[in-house]
Image 1 (cartoon, one colour):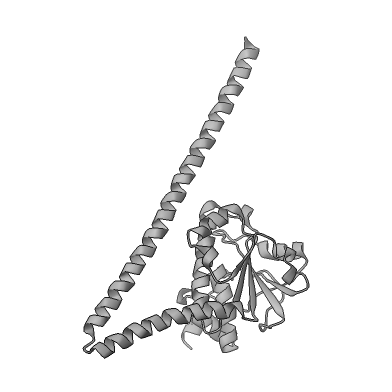
Image 2 (tube, helix red, strand yellow):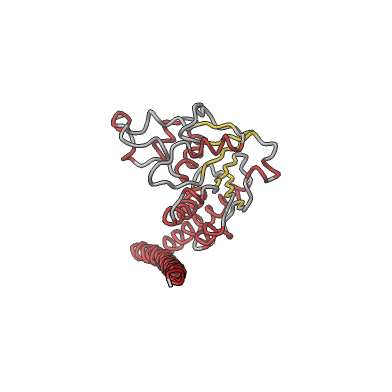
Length: 275
């Protein structure tokens, strides 16, 4: 009887664990679907708002010629972004986002990474010096979140492989950017490929990207931003900001000006604000 009871308890416990796992899975699926609907709804609202703003501006214009000029300029801006997207694919300045940090991120952080990649793609099309972007090591969960932003239509290179397994980079001069690197990056060079870790960590994981560079046997370096960031903030930039810092340096050839043009004001040292 005791043996029966023992095995009976094990079976009941195992059944309960399976049930709990299924409940968590169902709950996560509902959460993901709600997030997807939220993203879609935000896009619709943004599109509607832009359309309304455009209509209101047109209503203030007096002549048909002025209205036509405004419509053409609006279309011109949209075409310019498309041209920048094509231009980025020809850029000699290559940036890899290495998304090999799945095990270090929660589901929420992985959704945040997908959003940051979408923001980076959008801003790269607007910048004066667009970069050639590569998103590598795309794993199934990230792929699912990126699909919400239609990433397969983006004008960049995406791949499920680790970048060291991609032929284009096997002989390349790779520099893995890490806030924990000892060397400071002084300038951006055409003959170097810069890697940014696709990691969103609400609680900073010390040496995560530095260890990654060592594991892959590539050189590491950090952006020279320590002197510009408030002492109360970590010397880390998110994925999109780090990439845009490189674009900013290419525009100004000055890290201070690049930082000032890209990074939110709340992160900046008081002395820099007063300059």
